[in-house]
Length: 371
Image 1 (cartoon, rainbow, N blue to C red):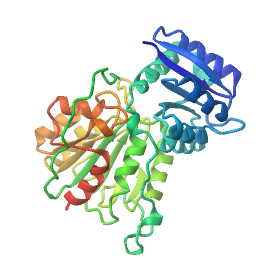
Image 2 (cartoon, one colour; image 1 turned 90 degrees about the horizontal axis):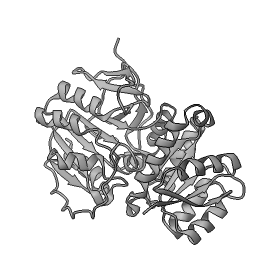
Image 3 (cartoon, helix red, strand yellow; image 1 turned 180 degrees about the vertical axis):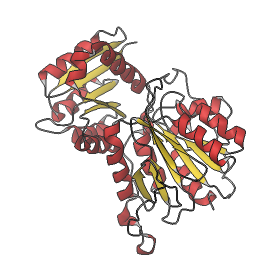
Image 4 (cartoon, rainbow, N blue to C red; image 1 turned 135 degrees about the horizontal axis):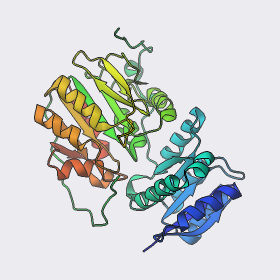
């Protein structure tokens, strides 16, 4: 059955172009269009699409407000279009928190210069998020600094020391019983990898950690170069721990999470020094979870706790295999709480998961486990 799509954009050119691209796929049917957020809400309720593509900046009602209303009235997977700017990143992160599933850069030049690549990417996104887990993308409350007791508040920022795509199969989800609570252990590093649904998932995990969290953290989120700095800044404001976009030469320390920069690769050596390398065009993901996991397996042996969260594809599986061979622990997010059960599923099916937890239990277990 064809995926039914509602296209929302105030630009007549962009509505037509997106509709043409999607309609060229025999398994996608554009069932309607809207020119602003209010029309989007009305059309979503009347037409009941499988997926909505949404612009942010529109008259009458903006895209974020529309997403919030749609999630309350008729929850539907939403793909946001965003500009590759710092402001575009901030807006996109707001949209994801409001309930949007994923995003694509809104780049007219790419549509003109490389239409086949744009068509492939857009249609792949539509098919993937059509199979997303609707239970997991409704907005949920997240801890904020306002809720943190004064004694536990984050101290003043400290400078960081420097040294010199397969998709979810169309089958009924198998019930999975969550693993037992983990035993307490001293880890030298916590490494978390994620993709689609990751920005909100990371927010929900990291806001559960206290300012004195005893282990350094590295984060690998599939995200464009223009977005990771804004995402790190957002997490830093929300979390008790410190969060920053990683730079070459940064040194790991407890209570600090370093986010791999978009378009690059992040590795960590045995001294705890971060190496940021150019993104290899031969690799699908920049940053790549496998690359970072593999480097920390080599550097830290059995002293790593790795966590694989929601995301499509299987990035992280081979890196997790190396971590397991070194004696480290690997956790996977459970299917029911994933937006896209791809990356965690790859870990579970390869028998690499030491534990499987619902998203909202992962932060709590990290806080209780790491000593």
